[in-house]
Image (tube, rainbow, N blue to C red; front, side, top):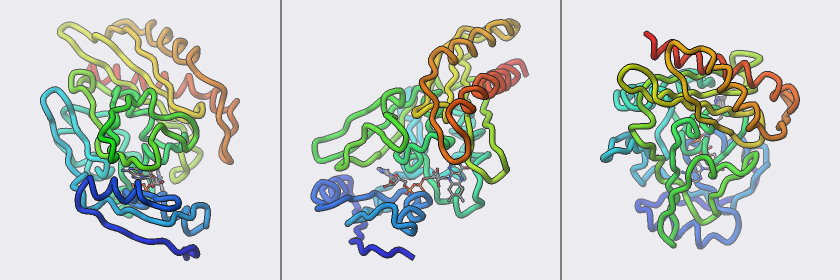
Length: 284
Ligand SMILES: Cc1cc2nc3c(=O)[nH]c(=O)nc-3n(C[C@H](O)[C@H](O)[C@H](O)COP(=O)(O)OP(=O)(O)OC[C@H]3O[C@@H](n4cnc5c(N)ncnc54)[C@H](O)[C@@H]3O)c2cc1C
């Protein structure tokens, strides 16, 4: 049961949503799919004075706009799995979404934007957005601003999003998101949250791979990423890529499932598996 009272609004335009967020007297929370938010409210861990339901804003589209893949903030995991545009331009997101737990009530309602804004280090979306070198488009009454995923996440459950902004879209260059992809996560049980996640993308060009990228989530307070050069036949560079990401790793982050030292210790192997999976896809 949700004990604390709150007002509810369902705007139908971006401007109306921005006005509601800007005018709230206390905490105003946007609702994406509500799968993270409502459990928080039920446990009385957040007491917003206003809930702004984003369902009327048309943020469910997956489309290509010129050289960019555009995902509305309310695109669900099920929509990612079922999308031809995703399988062609960002197969990483389909791989990630297929592994999300919780059954249809989570995969059919939980959104990519909600996960990004929640910024739980032990979740699937943040490292994937980094691996796609995505940008997050925030909207407020002041206008829009695009923030690279590499800057958006500032700490556990913290982002650069200001209280009067909502996330409208996620954009990624098609040239960077195409090619092969690998995703791997370490979990203690099928239904538990990930301990560490790793997402790898490979940009292909004729005769080999132009550039690889690997991002790790859960090993530290924010996801981290690193680019690497690799050719399909050159497995030594996988080790160089793993070493590079290890050097980039910040101090560990702990929660009730695993402490920071453990997460840092397992991260290199999780990264290696993701990179090798991407290479295998490229080979095949
Ligand atoms: C049983 C269960 C299983 C789960 N399994 C997984 C899993 O396998 N992997 C995983 O990563 N996560 C998992 N989750 C966590 C979570 O539900 C998902 O990550 C989900 O994607 C969160 O998205 P949402 O749209 O439901 O977010 P919401 O609950 O709607 O919102 C989360 C937070 O982000 C804010 N927010 C949402 N959308 C926006 C927006 N567009 N602009 C601004 N702020 C916004 C909200 O105000 C809130 O603070 C699970 C949760 C449950 C309950």
